Amino acid sequence: MISQLLEELAILAGNIKKNKAVNVNSQKTKQQAIDLGAGYFRDYRGPVVGVLRDSEALDTYDEDWQQLIRLAHGNNPKSTYEKLVRRLVKTTKEINVTSHSAVSIAPAIASTELTYSQAEHLLLETLDNLLPSAAASYRQGLADIANPSIRHSYRGTAAEFREAFRETLDHLSPDKDVMEQSWFKPEKDQKLPTMKQKVKFVLSSRGKNKTQRVAAEKTVDLMEALSGDIARAIYNRASLSTHVETTKQEVEQMKRYMDAVLFDLLEIGQ
Image 1 (spheres, rainbow, N blue to C red):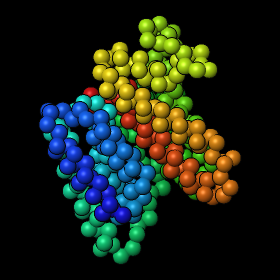
Image 2: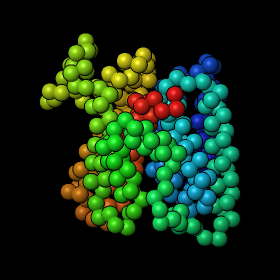
Image 3: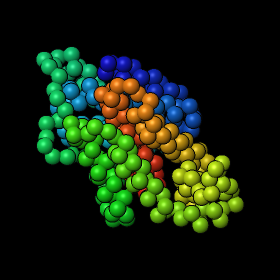
Image 4: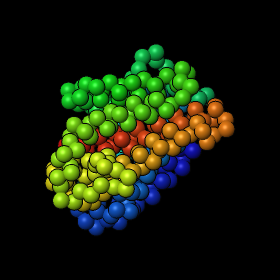
């Protein structure tokens, strides 16, 4: 399975190499990077955890994938993409070799304590200083994901992450300020600005170009769609065990989308 991830990385590397400009401006290539990053966390991370037993190495690898998603949300230098993808390819090759020589699959990182990735540390530190209540919701969501044995439903987990995101947006983009913008028009069946419109307001006020704004807004759409799916899931799936496992994956995916947008909104690492 990890060999397939290597193949997808090779395709991405080839498309980046074809780029003639200093920055990677191709929306198709950037979307490919976002999809591959999201696919890593959704489809490949589980097998990687079973092979990469060093928690620090896993955190670094996760952070590189997060960085790929962040890069694709703007017009960033081709050289930065190439350096990052080369590092991802090198590490993935090592993981692939190890996966073939491993005697057994290791369980999830053995620890009774909740551990955070570097990206999650940065988000929590920023939210703790800016909005402690949003940080508390985000931290609760992380705790839920880290302790699957005690979770019988992930609807509450999704709500915690969404609340952290909503509260951050409300702080950065008050309804009144958004509604005063010349481009603002209430969406169907809405009286107040939507989360997507709030994201547009924040990024526009910081001089972000249209491509950067649209990428973030599309990510919010994906996050909202997943949030709705999670809320409806228990009524639409016959098997509760299947529902719980599938919904956990959807919550993790929603969180990855949310993290990418929060890094932009909070200007982390910029």
